[in-house]
Length: 310
Image (cartoon, rainbow, N blue to C red; front, top):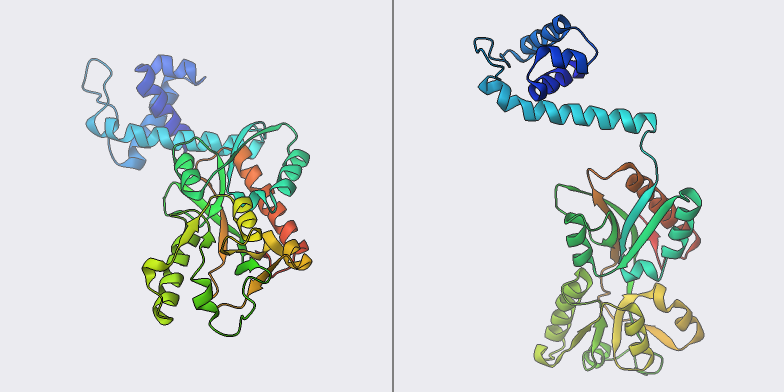
């Protein structure tokens, strides 16, 4: 189907006059009439009521007009993207979780600045559920969060996997070979905020451990925080045991200040994904490509026990 004929139909419906349409499209009235006739033959329906004194679309014409407009607009966007008419200028409203802030965000921002120097970045740090809500509400252009999305208007790409471990202050559990689970359950369990995927997974693990080791579930405590920095500080202070990616305490483990506990089962890894709306403009796609590249470069330089590229 020739999109020029669809454009003719859309323009004719707007101007409601063959001569005016011909002038607008730099054609003759006869050419406009022929294009319309050809389109009607392809669609196997009449679009214009030729029996009416005044210009009027048929019921089918009214019904199909919206579809025609959508096709014409899509064709226009395709041509603009292919010709480079769209530029990587503008304001990128970027939303990330704190896990990314403490890992590869600085590398990503440096790459954005190098690849797209005219792109202005407006950064938001929040929990995954809020980032997702703001993306769908068109308050953010690109988000990097835990988990993906089942919204049909959103495109998601998994980026990296962060293995999660049990972490405690060194010496907090001198005997890790006997009754470790029971000892751990006597302390607050620190993890991400309530309602997040890591928090939900930890609730299941704690319930199972409590049942196996005869600890009343009412005596267990899970303390959630959206801040990795806060969780790490609480572990250093000996407040509780954390279920977090080792990436954020690797230096403290190396220095001997905190230790990884051999408690099973280990919490599930955190999968970080990137999401954008399906109809996002070109500069968002460019920013998404830069994010994949920056994350890949960071992961390749890091120990796979800390973060793994997906």
